[in-house]
Image 1 (cartoon, rainbow, N blue to C red):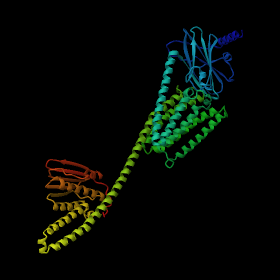
Image 2: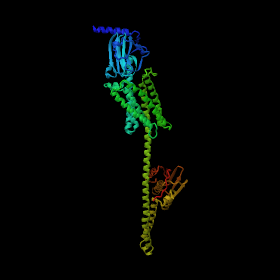
Image 3: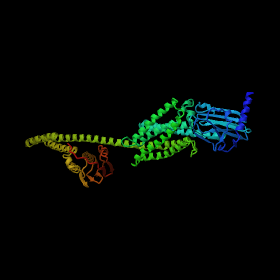
Image 4: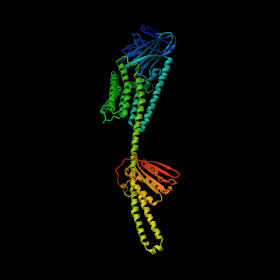
Length: 624
């Protein structure tokens, strides 16, 4: 009996309350728009039940958007649907961040289905798994159906849009949405892995802060879109009380400013804005910690969201101004990295302004100028960051590493060159010492032996009795001459003073006197003195060419040309020998002084051409 009375009362209340309520006729195969079909009633007491609220007059909204600004009331929405045939439709409340959401379906005045959910309850309370609030409605094709929705927030901004979908369209839309979210997640993970690898390999802070920026924006999007509650903390609804989508905006500002400083290379001694940015960051960190503590302690619950929301808008403007100040200090220098970041910041600034205007309209309870959710703009900005900033980081830091590697290689080459020059200098000193010892000690001994033999063979009887002494005297003379040639080849006497051209002339004169080969020596161009080590190496190369012709070419004529060109020194050796001259490490000696060698070996001649670039002339010192 009591149940029958309740049903009758509900039926009477429903009939009375829907007077003036427009009915939306659901037609298959068309897109649905509820503009002008959604009625609203505000329960300021937050105590009315479904039976009580249907007795109050509802006001029809001009569209399908409800935007009431800051509120703690219960806001009821009613939609009357009718269909000519049985079908299932989906009513969607397009705002995943509502503390309390109640769905009711009344068909023919009877309550046939209800769902009580909200982000203050566990995710499974939604009954229909979706990042938004979705309520399936069964239309019987006969009686009108009333859908009542109650939405409430705890002294926060409440704005929502009611949408209607037929089953097939909603399924396609739902699959497409989750596919796009999955692609975005996969792409984000890929960019994260690339930057993690780069950070692990280089230990550069810019990669670490870009990773923090990606994580902060990803967390913000997941919280703002409702995906975070669906997949990350579905069993911890208390986490929603911290307003993660709002506080993560503060983390984005912190990581963005920190990343900017490392990306453009902002240093304390080069920027007046540096310490202002630092103070802003530390202050923001302190306020973030304080905000979390107050929320955990449930202090000032009525004003907390409004204070945080307004502070977020103010801090966003301040962070944009600080970034603009930091960039403007460096943009005059026309640095490529700063110009690149200026471009990316300008694009981001457009997105930030859109988000600011959209959120500002909701805080004032007005219709926003742009009919898109703010998180959509954040996602677009995020994709831009992933694509452009990641490419910029990899490009500019690759260039930096390349310059560093080139500098290291140059430094290493200079060190190797200096070490080689020290080794060469030590070898030359040792060569000179050996040459002096050979000439002064061994040469003196041989000269004394020649003197003794000469004194003995002056006597006719001795010369007749011992004819071999005459041959010994000749051998000793030849040994002294060879000793002089070897000593001269090791290092001509007074080489530093004579220079390369005259030292080679003396060497060729001595070789010509001791061999049957006819040597011709030609010097062309204005003689140019090189540094001592280079001249010594060129002399060694020339001696190597001469010795190769003498020992293994089988030549009768040879020419050595020393040409002082404009940019390089050329050395050319030609001979008419039947065999290719054999050289000892000639290519290595030429390569050591950055020279180039070209050989042309024919049946009746052989030519070797060597080109040596001029190097920086250092003070010419004496070789000991």
